[in-house]
Amino acid sequence: MKFYIPFILLVTISQLCFGQQLLTVSQVYDFEIGDEFHYKNGSHANTPVTRNADRIKIVDKFYSNNNDSLTYIRFHNKYHTTINASNNLDYHFMDFTDTLVLTNLQDPIFLTATVIDTNFSYDTLTYNGTQDYCGVLINETEKWTPQPQLDPLQYIHKVGEGLGLVLNDASMIDGGNDYGSFKVLYYYKKGNTECGIEDKTAVSIAEQTSAKTIIYPSVTENRINIKSSLPFNNIKIVSLNGKEVLNFKKKEETIAIGSLPNGVYFVLLLNNNTKVYAQKIIKQ
Image 1 (cartoon, rainbow, N blue to C red):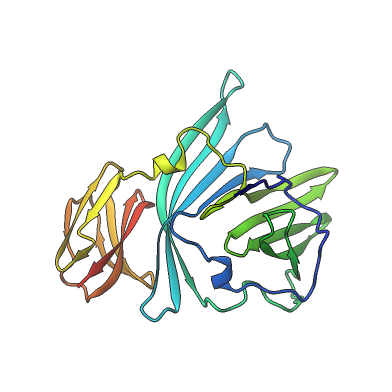
Image 2: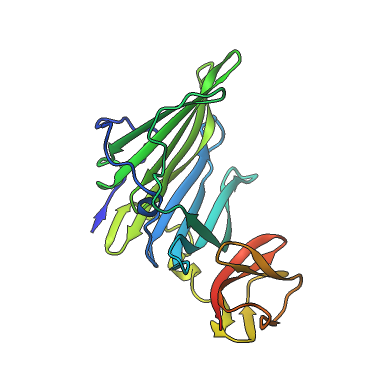
């Protein structure tokens, strides 16, 4: 089933309802392997039209031994554009894998009370975003911060049930000009449900996620092997709680992990401190 998201950065909230459900961390980040989320990034300023996007696919998911944290491995296919001498757009692509570790899974995603402190005014709103994301429950928080002799900065942050982030927006209007930046979800696919318009710029995310890297065996006692066409010059092994336990500061095809206690770990491949791949292994 496929729906469409009207691409409006700051939508008018026609069904504002206080006292509705405040989503928990686990409800907001309720992903399954294969889910896809496409984001646009940009600026409100009156600059030449360019395009920036991040297409994300969930490639692995697991809970900690005590079920008190949840980890996702995400594949990113990103691109941005620049304007060349002929006034045309040049596309620049990159892809990498990262991890998202979530704790306090049953906590509300936002505070339920209005809070005023010396830096921000907070107004937490909850409403049904039926016109935005195909009927998914959306939680929103807005923040205003004053600026001397200028209009206040406004921050809008929205999350959706099972969608994660759907909007980050920071804006300020000064002298009739709108300044700021945004990141907005404009397409998602969960199971058989699609909402929005898929970004098929250049190669698709499904093709991008085809195997470029193999780390094996995934269950091992002593060693793992790494075969990859991706550039990398650093290998890190981290535990489920994100603690680094081994660090190999050069490219290796075989590494020894026999000294580690039994458990679940991540193998991270980095190139010049940028993570390009991550995979779960089990040491036994």
